[in-house]
Image 1 (cartoon, rainbow, N blue to C red):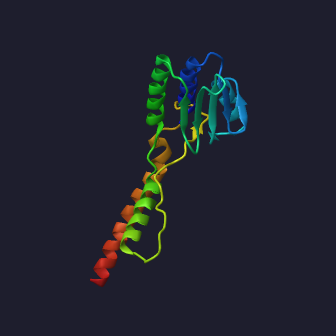
Image 2 (tube, helix red, strand yellow):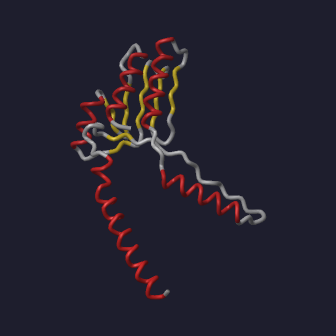
Image 3 (tube, rainbow, N blue to C red):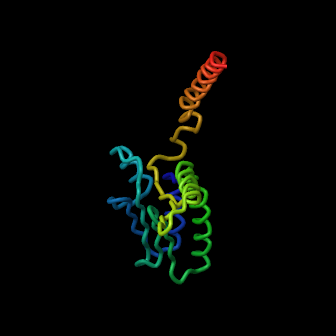
Length: 173
């Protein structure tokens, strides 16, 4: 989740509160998401693991991190609309963790093949924690900018491996 998304969530839930909500990010108390995230970014903090918003003496609560929680007690129609929009933002920011899912599938397949009596192991879960980046989405590099070198190295390795495999096959075959 990016700073833009977090600011949008704060704006949405701020509309549900009569007083400005209390914001905390890890061990920092925030007044304004944009200004304070800029300050954190200048201090070298690029990721936030825990973010919490509490307003109207706990009537409105949002917690992002290891567990994601949204609570609004006695919601009004405006609160329900904000909750729907917030759910869309959180759902949009969810990403698929490929390595976690591969480990879970591999563990499940090994346990299904090797069944030992009296052994019960918990399967790995697919849940991931929420990480909030202090930079904006526009400041972040694109997928191709981040992965260009990896793709180039993999392509060259594939070509060299194919040539070596061909000549080894010709020599032994």
